[in-house]
Length: 72
Image (cartoon, rainbow, N blue to C red; front, top):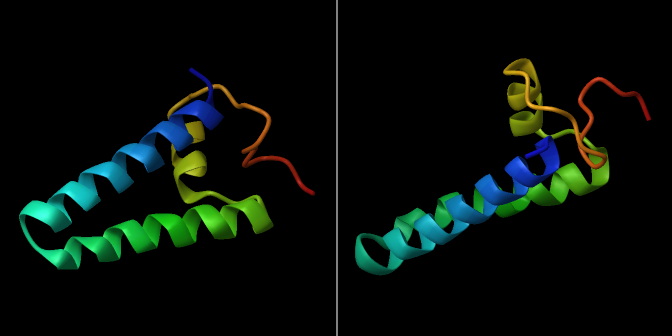
């Protein structure tokens, strides 16, 4: 999998898990959902994704949406 797919899969998984935790454990887990959503929103405008930068350092191949080394 390339970087784009990993970032999207990770974001979706965190949102689903935090919603389940909010329903069954405590509503404060919705803050995590909001944080992930806000981070995805800012990444769409700035092109910077912290997770993409971390994954690139671990050698995950770059996709077309997140390229931490490229300058816009």
